[in-house]
Image 1 (cartoon, rainbow, N blue to C red):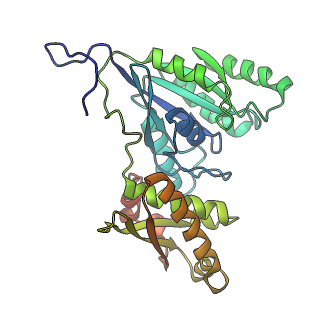
Image 2: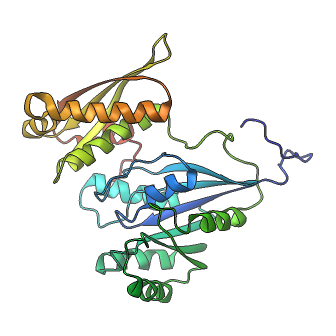
Image 3: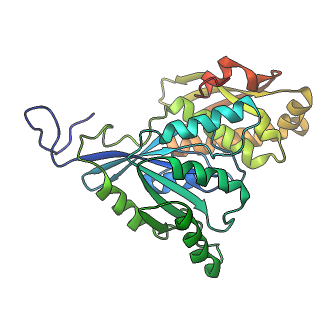
Length: 311
C-alpha cells in the first residue's frame, strides 16, 4: 500500500480510515458489472447485453472520502447445468461469504420471475447485512417499481432499498456515500491509485472476450474462452499482446474467423482500441483461434480463467 494521509496508531492500525467489502449478488444481466464500474469510476469489469458475461469474481476498488470499498463483482447466479456453470455459481457465493454488506442487485425492468425465487431464498438464509439495489430504474415501469420493491422486502429483510441506474448514474452518489459510511474502521487494503485486483494481463483477455460477446450472437460466446499467451512491453513503451481464442468445434472456428477473416479482425480492432484507451499506451494485439474440444471441462482452463474446479 502506498502512503496515505491517515495517522497510524502504535499497533500499526490506521486511524481515520475505513475499509470493507460489499458483494454484488444477483441474477444474470442484472447490471452488477456496470454498477461496479460506475461506483469505481472507471471500467474494471466487462459488460454486454448478454447474460452470464461475467465468469469469475473480481474486486473493484472504490474510494469515497476516507473510505475504501472493495466491491466484489460476481457472476450472475442461475441454475447450473455444466461444470463451468457450477464453478461460476460457486464463485459468486464464495465472493459473498465474507462481505460486510451484501448488495442484492435486481433488474427492475425484468422484475421478479420464478427464476429469481431460489436466489431470494438463498439470500434470505444468509446472515449479515443485506441491501436491495433496484437497478435500471431509468427503463423500468414506474408503477411496477414500488410494487416489486415491496414484494422483495416482504421476502427478505433488507436494511435499505436503493433505486439506481448504473447506466445513467441516477441514485449512485447516494448509494456510494451510504456504502462509504457503512464500511468498518480499518486500514485500506489497496493503494490509492489501484482500481481492481485484476492484472492487466487478465483484463486484456476479458476485453477481448467482451468483444466476442458483443459481436457474435446465439450460443457461440458461451462456447469460447480467451487465453493470454504473451504480454510484453516493447522498448517504446507500447504493449505486444498475443491471445488465443478457444472454441470446441471447427464450425465454431469458422464463425469466429468470419468470411476471409473479417470477424476476427473486427474483434481484434475493437479490443485493441479499448485496451489502448484503458491502459494509456499503444497496444499491438495478435489473436488466433484454436479448436479444443471440451475446453470447458478442463481443470487447466478453469485455472486460466480464475475459477475453482468444481465436481
